[in-house]
Structures are given as C-alpha cells and as structure tokens.
Length: 258
Ligand code: MF3
Ligand code: CO
Ligand code: CO
Image (cartoon, rainbow, N blue to C red; front, side, top):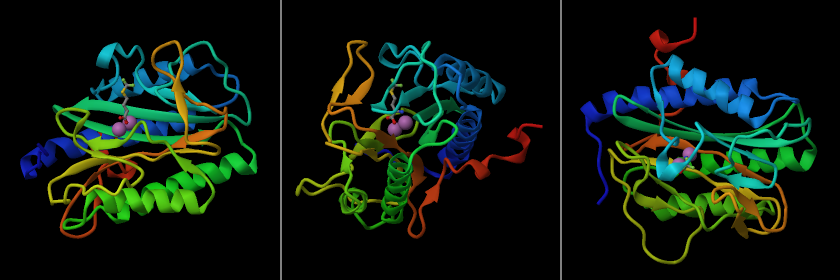
C-alpha cells in the first residue's frame, strides 16, 4: 500500500526533510583530510541534536551509527570507525532524521579535499542522474520513468547502477512502498500520484555493478574494488514540478544555525 501525504502530513514532513538536508550540507562541509569517519559521525550527532531531531538510522535493524559513511569502493551503509579519510578519497554521506514524526532521507558523495577526474566525473554523473530521475517524478508518470531516466544517464556515461539496493517511499517510516529502482526490468510499475513522497537514490559504480556485503554485516562494497557514488533526495510528487523536500535552503530560518 502506498501512503499518500495530505497537507497536514506535509506540514510536519517538510521540516523533517529540511533538517536532513541541512545536516547533510553541514556534515559535507565538515569532511576534511585527517579526520576519522567516527569524527564525522560524532559531528553529525551534534548537528542532529541541535535541531532537536533524531537519527532515523541508529538502531534501525541494529544499525550502530548516526549516519552512513561510505568511503571509495564502499557503496552504502558504511560504518563509522577509526579509518582516517585521506586527500583524494570520496565519501558518501547518507543522513536520515526523524522530526515531527516524519523521516527525511538524503545523501551525497563528496571529495576529501579534492579528487582525481574519474572520481569527480563519477560524482557529477550520479548527481545528474538523480536530477534526471527527479525530473520524471511527476503525477501521471510511473516509477519506471524515474528508473529509466536514472539508468540511461548513468549507462550512457559508461558507469553502472547497483541492482541490490533501491529507492523507496518515505514518510512516518523510513522505508515505505513503492520501491524505486535505478534500473528498469520490463515489468509495469506503480503510477505516480500527487501526495506520494519518494526517496530517489542512485548508487553508481565506476566499474561493474556487482556488490557484496562485508563481514560487519552492513558495509556494501563494489566486488571489483571500483569507486562508487550515491546521491539521494526525498521528493514530493505533485501534478506539476516535483518538490525536493530535502533541498537544504528549504530549512525554515528559525531552524538555521545562528
Ligand atoms: N538511508 C538509507 C536509505 O537510503 C537506509 C539506511 S538504513 C541503515 O535507504 F540502517 F543503514 F541506516
Ligand atoms: Co538514505
Ligand atoms: Co533512502
């Protein structure tokens, strides 16, 4: 069952998503060479607390960290720890918060200080693929229109989309129906209707699309060791332009850092 949000729901969900988007920007700006991923997770904890929100990830299926931090060949669900980030690494940051009883879910990949041209192109193509997908997120179209737009942009640029993890509906729960794959499989998919809120989230590999899970039970890595990037926004389907709920500038000024 796909849960449609009414205006009252959205009044509560918009600030939740704004907090997620703002915390993600703050954490992205904090990343620099020499810090450990635990330093970044601790900083995220302090920013989430600052907005009186809670991590949507900590404790979810026993997930042990505030946010997901995935370095280089790590695709998603990386665990914070004593690993030091080095100049040239790329780091995927995924922030999910609960606020007003709703979840906002958003991610981006950033370079640590700077990175080489391949890594930069991977990040650019993944972010553009997300926005190509968002452009299809309009009432009357189908989930498969989002999937196709993402896949086409990624594959026409020589990269691959991960199959094992997908985008999703999001609302009072982090993972609601429908699934939003980053590839098409020929099957018919749900029609998009105003009031649907979707997390669209391409995970893109520089090499093969194959992934595996490390022995920690969480960290997803590329099988071939190639770099991976991840961008995600929570969006509201309307009859016209989609509303990107996790856009950081949407944070109400009363929530802004002084
Ligand atoms: N935020 C992830 C997603 O986009 C889910 C993370 S689940 C966790 O769907 F347990 F790893 F936090
Ligand atoms: Co996410
Ligand atoms: Co998500």
